[in-house]
Length: 210
Image (cartoon, rainbow, N blue to C red; front, side, top):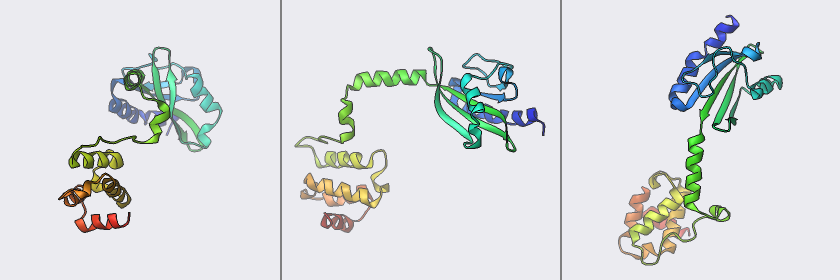
């Protein structure tokens, strides 16, 4: 297979990546033999304004010259772009045997996402020093048993369904609910058992292990 034919065989993959990520993504294929005119394929619409016959970026040249491809098949999630645009970029090394033949480069415009994160940070106004210290107080005195169960399940299970959590997580949920006095209320052992997908006997066993 000729070099150009080999490189262009990656064109369907480039199209797939670009379409999967929408208009905020472009994918290019470079022939490393001619760094100044390396682009032999680029998806449309482009983000960088480049066209066929344009050259590699300084970073792409650096990747080639450093022979990074000898140790890594790809480099992912580095920052590229311009003052107006910020890209999350990745490069896949296309090899012809042991020789580097070309690069499949992907650029995803994350400028709007970073702006959205900046807006969220301004709204949250949280002390970064406290973010990793866990929940200070999950609920107020007088909260209903259901609210306490919901809060504790959310605290320990996160986005996962409580019944799909590992046994240790379920045990911690039971321990926390016992500390909040949930099991002193009639019928709550049965309710918690249903939420965790276990039997009432299992809940009692968790409590004995506390």
